[in-house]
Amino acid sequence: MATVLLIDDTPEVTAVLGAFFERAGHQVVRVHSGEDGIEAYQRTRPDLVLLDLQLPDMSGFDVLERIRGDEPVVIMVTGHGDIPLAVQALQRGAENFLTKPVDLDHLRVAAERGLEKARLRQLARYMRERRGIKGVGALLGTSPAMRELAHQIELLTSSDRTTVLLLGEQGTAKGQMAYAMHGMTARADKPFIEVACAGALEGALDAEIFGDENGGTREAPVRRLGLAEVADKGALLLDEIAALELPVQAKLLRLLEAQKFRRVGGVQDVVVDVRVIVTSSRDLVEEVQAGRFREDLYYRLSVLPVVLPPLRARAREDLVSLIDRIAGELRRQLPHAPADISEGALDQLLRHSWPGNIRELRNVLERAMIVARGSRQIAIEHLPPDVRRSGGAAASHVPRTLHDVERAHIERTLRAHNENRTRAARELGISRATLINKIKEYQLDPQALTFALPEA
Image 1 (cartoon, rainbow, N blue to C red):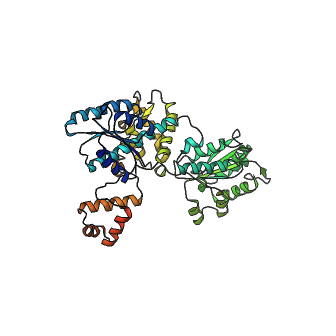
Image 2 (cartoon, one colour):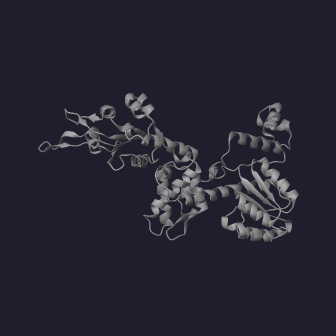
Image 3 (cartoon, helix red, strand yellow):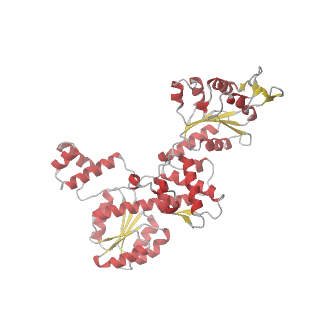
């Protein structure tokens, strides 16, 4: 729900426009003078302002000048003869203007755009305010889903022995999360050793992880320590655990259960105190069903799995936090890189589907910052072509519930048939009685047009 401030000296106008926004589920504040409008703005911090150009105590320009420092989203409302003045309003910072009497169709479109603009500005402010935040909060974000995930991680890190299983698509920064989690435990000052399981030569991982009693060459054999031993008292990260061969999986299971193992060619147990963290971009249940992964090892690993969602499934504020964190890291490496990202560029970054996840996002930002060197901010033209084209269907997408979509579709169909319920029901593929029930359920008003502010 958005807050809309109406500043107009005609009560009849604010009544009609206020009812229009209230039917769409928004909170409306009505005032009838410039001074009252400024006071109401400072008190309510609305998402959208509809501002009349002619007010009894001052002009709409004066009000706009007094509040423009907070970057409000303002739609000017003018009489038919005020078009040149309305153009000036746009030049002074207004987003749009409407002429009286206000056409509700035009109002709906202008309001949707204005509310989306307000949302982008809120996200940009949120991004600036969160600069400097570190740890898991910087890696994840603050949406309800991410706060729940952070709580899950806190539970895991409260014990420095529990095995950690990090799941997620490639590029979701599972390794970075593993390192952050290690830094939150009592083992933070002890070794953090990483083993890349994918792509290793057959048989190589056994000796790499658990060591070899007869390493070196035949002429000069030497005991080779495994990385599990090197990580004693610390943490051992096994990246892409599904690539481990079955015999090595058996040795890993023993390590997890007994904190001991034998080197290749060894006859004595090596005892260690190591926390094991594993990652996988594959579905381990499918791997178990296919016989490529031990079922007992899977259950031993999946005490409390942590699933890192792909970027396309994350909330906008979480993406903004991630963009700002990565951009901050890159600025330290790239002299003369822009300090900020324009609203247009941020909008395109938020629309992109990011099939490569965080790895792709980092590459795009690095490229943009190099191209934009010397500029004050990253603009749309600094982004790669595929990201600039990330509008299409997504560009007009506004998140809505299924309830909202059905209500809006029925409403449009009724208007198309001039409120003829029989013809509308036929087009919708439902009975006339069902349509009447839907009209009652959604409290449809033929004069109202609906829209909604995207949810956080």
